[in-house]
Length: 614
Image 1 (cartoon, rainbow, N blue to C red):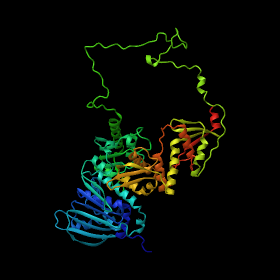
Image 2: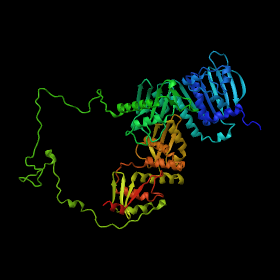
Image 3: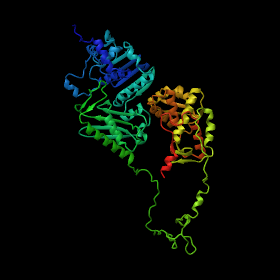
Image 4: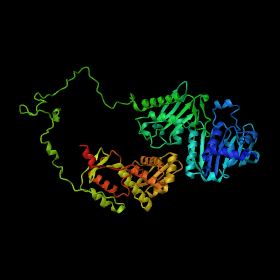
């Protein structure tokens, strides 16, 4: 019987390794940029075509490679950072296993041009599918120039499973943000399809955070800084009022390497307990400095999961430093002695005798008597600074305007067409409604008591209205007298660009620029006032939150996000006419019982259940 175990060819082994290391174009960007940082580059330029499908080019001014090093760099497990097993426990560089370039060369067409400062000529190598096509000398400046073309060209199955260009570009942005945040001393340039996306200049960590995300973000951050014998922690955390309903600005770094750590994330979130809603995400940019021998970065191929030797103590230190910063900068009131006082306190004059305060008393007042004494009132009015006892006689007259006669039984009508809204509104005409706690509408119905959440009801009404506009192509728009221009984060710009056709169907007229600016010229009629920047940011946050609703399509998610943004808040007071109109519009909806996210809008308490309470 023939042997069945065989050694795999190098090309096949490299493709298998690529499946773990190179998952998408963002993985290529990550590996090449990390290699550039390890080479001591102070400037890194990244050029992309079709979100990295057609081209990922990374140019750096690092120290470059010799002829033999350039060739060996594409071999598996070839690395310049490890000489023996003990070196694995003292790693301070980004890449070290020697699998990245070999994996990239196995699934793409790679051009490498590299040169050291002491060499007159550089080296140019062309590789495709792990096969070296050519190697020759070339002229270039010091550094390296990697060009990765046609990713997964020889593995069409993997290429087919890539997401849209917008989604893949978002993954690339995430990798660049993670690398750029912990390296503010390096200049980064990002160009996508001949459009400049990032131009990150040198600066401190706080400036780099604002460059990557949005301007004035520093005003929403609080610094943290502590040094212990176990670990040093510094960075910035967001103020409680800046917490969002979607994730995206949570970053941990250890020894200038990005990491994911769910346990440390819980430590930060627990420090915000009772300061933010349970479904909100605080922003944080936290950097750990620790002895490399106390951590293990080699437990995952992407090196984003890191194990700490003394994780429990690091966890406690992290939570304490976050709590201390929140208490020091956000919760404890501060006094500014340099600013003028708000209250003008007069200075006492030593040459004047202060007048004693005048206290007026009613000698005839008897708190235990309900009659008048000596023909005088037992209480004072407001002019004499006294308290006037209310007259509680004839209290029954307070209810004389209430109709105690039984009301005719009402029947609930749930029309499904939009034309029947006026008829359904008449269903509540003339009936008595109560607005409880500025949130719930209470109404008596045939079978008991109906309770309606007015915000959720408004969300359902607006959702079906916006969805109808998208389907019919008609929209209600209000032009702005002066267009609003505001800056937004690049991630938000990408979401708006993806939703732009649908947004225009809803009544938006906006322009997006490459400099991360949004110009709003018109908005739906439901958006009133001058809070357009705040409303646009809230719309994007709601859309991110709704992305988990897999049962909804992009149009439904956008309509749901628009409805949540434009709907009235829970603490708003409603008049009788407003409550009647809202309920009429609600029961004209196709599904009045639930919000688009599946939350109940109304609840019915049967009469029998109410009677049992008494």
